[in-house]
Each structure stands twice: as structure tokens, then as C-alpha cells.
Amino acid sequence: MHGIATLNYFKDVRKKFKFLVEQYHYKIRKIRLENMTYIAIYTNRAVNRQIKMGYDIHDNAFYFYVMKGERGKYPEPYTGKDDNIIMFYDVIKKHINVPFEAIITDDKQYFKALELNAELLRKYGDGILRGTDWI
Image (cartoon, rainbow, N blue to C red; front, side, top):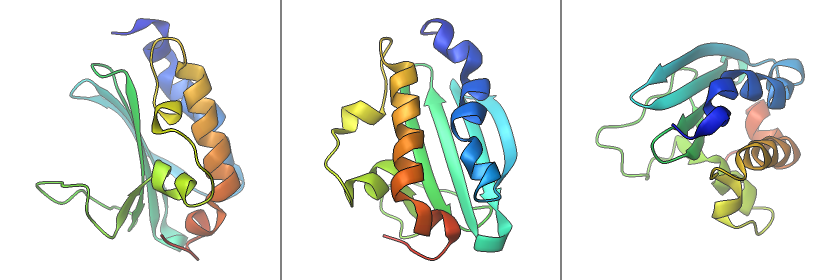
């Protein structure tokens, strides 16, 4: 494990992404630890969207996705090419140039990366979160 960051992951996600609940009416569907990855899943049935936020303890990296479908699942095997699943990074890079490394993490920038992901999704993901836009 990589320090104290993992101890508060679920609390940190709830705090930084509370706008999903308050502004966009998403609900937390699952919060769990699975295969060395902390997973938080937000869903909004009305707009047919799911937000899956993972923090891989082994890699010490965030993996955040937006999915069409309230209970979207990765196809098996997942190749990264599915029209119904996009990474947060794909949403962000459509609008601004941010290095991928800035939105993942390491031991020194866990909170900074988490906050940046939330800030950029809030700023550039409005249409996707409301179900009116897709990449």
C-alpha cells in the first residue's frame, strides 16, 4: 500500500465528487475494495450514465471512466475501444491539453490528482453528466 492516501479514498471521493450527487443527481451505487483496487461507482438512471472511479493500490494510479448505461460493464476482454465507455481523460482532452500524468497519481500528488480530476470533470463534463453529450 502506498501510505495514508488509500486509507481515506472513499471519504476523499465522496468529498471531491459531491457535485455528482448535489448538482447532477447521481447516487453512489457501490463502494468496495476489489483485487487491490478501491472502486466507487456513481449512477444516474434518469440520464443512463455511470461513473466508475478506481484507485489501484498496486499501481498507485486512478482509473476513472464514464459509461453509457446505468449498469455499464466492461466488455471482455476490455481493449479500451468501446463506444459506451470513455476515460475522464478523454472528456478533458477534448477541451484542454493536460498531461495524462497530472490526472493519475503518485505518492506525492494523490490529493492534487484527485482534486484535479473532480475540477476538470465538473468544468468540462456537464453535457456528458447530464446525458446530452458524448465524445
